[in-house]
Length: 551
Image (cartoon, rainbow, N blue to C red; front, side, top):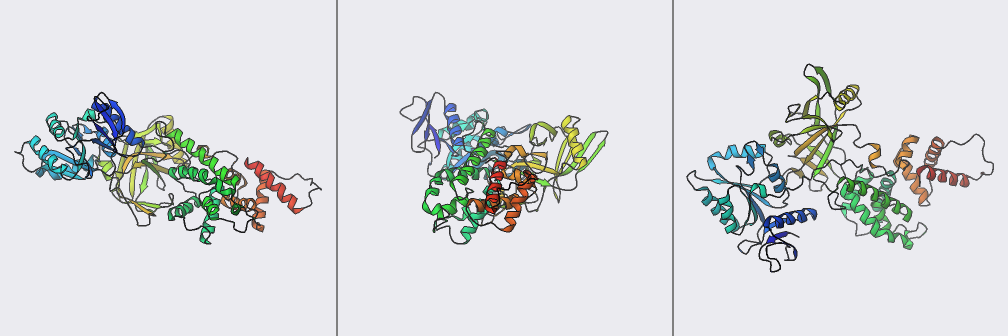
């Protein structure tokens, strides 16, 4: 629900922050305090701040924001980053650049706005240099109000602001713009689903293909289950997994949830399996506990943001490429390589694949924003900076090329040594999408093309992306057991799922389980004569494996 401010609320002597339906949130002594609350609440609830509610405005039209250029969006020494962030906080809103520059300067102005990385929808310029600037802007605002619900206008000229206000438009100077916190982040929590959840998704997909999933299953659930089976999950999916399993845990008490029931598996069991919860209450609770752990780590990363809102505007991609070059000369230690490759299809990123279109970084590279090269995304371990000239980023036919002079610090020397030895062979880049037009999806939502992105940083990273300790709930989990025993974690999970469901296992499954137990807990030379039954031996082996897994 959108939020507004008004000075016409009968319960407040000054300004009020209100919801779209008129419900009062709070009274404020100043207009700016009301604006700050409206923006903060809208961001926290993933809604929009619509500005001042006024009878003179067209409240039914599409929302719009008016913004000036010189002294407002662009300063003599660069871009007004605070204002750019503020504009980016408006979703589905027409951003209209209204400037006193004349139409003959359009080409130059377009280049400047592109270089600054400003996202906008319309550029309105004076047709004649002799036209009074304030009269021009007032006339254009009147015209725009016939079509748009203009929520706010930002202009550094006080005369222009007064004219906007006379039309019922909230008008702000540059220093009155709320400082919207930069929403970018580097996701260090490992979002990879554990092997038993991957196995559950595979089992759910098999049941679905056999026609056992019922009519209520959505294509999105099936697509996300395939991604989970492949080891790909997003932060948002983890939040939804926790909510789904917690809500449907009771479904596993139904008779058809028992493997001995003729109706097994019920459509509810299939759904829970597709969401990674397995087919028993024990397995569902295990998945729920794991999801709780992942979300807890995500929330720790997102201090200051609403609980459970795990989605970030910042994304990261990792490219492992050949062609790293390190050398040392009088200027220092040099590192060159590629942080991104064009027209190269990614692996599954959680139900979709992605390619980067040539030119995707052009706007970022032409802007004056400082981009840093970091060590493992650590902002305290800077390896280079575009502003200082120690980092140079260019686009060529292959991709985004990085050239850096590494510092003579412990991180710089470590980076040089690890790259030279071949221990580090990957770059990661952090980016966010412009409000509109930055990417293109196919009709099925399975393929994405990055056409224009905002580049925030590049990092030298170890591969794979996340340290082993960042995302595992316990070091004795199934993936860890499989790694120690040098077997495939998914095959091990599939075999254990059969045992858990009371199904027959194959000879290959039995051999796999035996090899894991022998590797992790070798049998003593002396056999226990009392264990002659094969079933007793299998039960013992299963118990040993459960102990080793910490379950």
